[in-house]
Length: 423
Length: 118
Image (cartoon, rainbow over all chains, first blue to last red; front, side):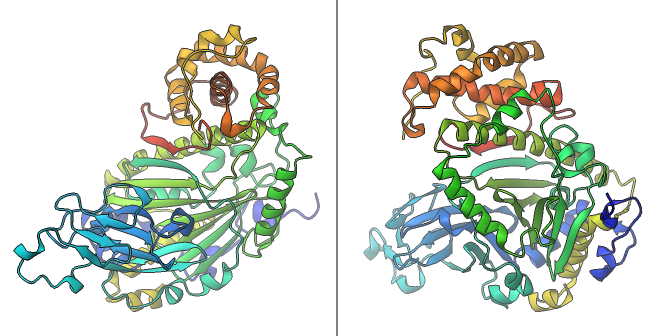
C-alpha cells in the first residue's frame, strides 16, 4: 500500500497537542484524587457551566416531564414541556417546606402536586393552589412558584445552567463548536437503550477512558480490538483532533477490512440478517446517509473511520458512528464516585431479524462497556495510592490533556466569562 | 404492546429446548446477561450448541409474527434466541463466562433495552 497514512505508523507524525496550544509535559494527578479539588469543581465548573441534560424527544408533548438528579450540585431538576410547547426547567423543591415535589422519573402531568401537603404547581412553574390557604399569613403566591432554572435548547439538546443569573447564554457558551456541529441530522432520537453504572472513580477517570482509542487493542482484544486497529494502524492513532475552547473533538480510526472470525457463528448469523430488499431498511438507510453527510461527522471522510467523540464540556460526550449516535454522561457523586449513563439511540426493530441483530449489538456493546468499567476502579486506586504524582500522556491522548487543562483553568477563574476566555 | 412471557411453553416442534426455559428464558437483556454471567462454561456451551443448532428453525418460525404482538410461546422462544446471542459473548469472544478481569457482580446495568423483550 503506497499511500499509507503517516499518522498511523510508528513514530509521532502528528502534533495535536501543540496545535491545541497545550504543553507536552507530564499532567498532575491531584485533580483526580483530591476532595478539596472536587469541592472547587462543584463550585467553579458545575455550578457555572451549561449542563447538557437531555434530548428534547424525552419530553415531546405538553405536560411531558422528566426528573434529573444533579448530585454534584445537590440539585433535583424537573424538565417539562409547558402548554405552549416550550421546554422549561425548575428546581424540584416545594415552596412550602422544601420537599421534593416530583418523585416519578418521568411522566405526563397537567400540574405537579407535592405529596406532602398537596401544594400544586402548573407546568410553567406557577403556584396553583395551597390547601387550607386561609390558615397561612398572606403568602406571596406570585413568588412561590417552582424556582426556575435557566434552560435553553440547541439542536434538540436540552441544557440548563444552575447559576441564578448565568453570565453568558448557551450560544456564547458553546461558541464556535455550535457552528461546526449545527445541522446534524440526528436519527432515532426517541427511546434510547440506557446503561448505567455507579463507578468507584473520579468523573474524569471514566471520561478519560472514553476519550482515547489507545487502550482499545489492549483492553478490548476480542470485542472490538480488531475493528479499531489494524496492521496499518496498530495503536489506533487518531484520524483528527480539534479543540473548540472548553469543548473538543476526536475522530477515531476503524478497520474497514474487519470481518467476523471463523468461530463467530452467532456474529456471522447477525451479519447475515441484513434484509437488503426491505423497504424499511431502505428508509433507515436514507436517514443514515443524510446523517453521515454532515461535514462534522467523520470530518476526514475516511472509509477507515470508526467513530467520533465530541466532548461537550464539562461532562458529556456525543459519539458519532456509522449507524447513528450515542451519548455518555459522567455525573460526579464525590471525588471518587461517578454515575455513568450511556444512551444508545437505535432504530425500532420491525422484524425478528432486525431484533436479533440489535440483541447482538446490545450484547457486544455491554461487554465492551464492562471491559472499560471494570478497569476504572483500579485506575482510581492507583491514583489515590500517592505513589505517583504525574501522568505521562501521548499525542493521541490529547482530549485527556485538554480536559485537565480546562479543569485547572476553570477552578482558578473568578467568573464564567474569565473561564471561557481562558479555555 | 404488552408481550406476556409465561415462563413455560415453547411452540410445538421445540420440545427439545423446553428444559432451558426456566434458566435461560429471561425476558430482558439485563436478566439474560446476569444469567449467562452466573453460569458455568459447560452450561453456557451446552445451551449455545443446542440453540445454535436450531437457530435457523427458530428464526423461520418467528419470522411471520409482528414484533409488537408476539403470542406467548413465540415470545418465550424469542427470549431463548436472545439468550443465545448473549451466550455467544462467552463462547465466541471471551472463552469464559465473563469478560476477563471483570468483577461479578459488577455495577453495570442495562436499565432499558430495545423493544420488545430487551
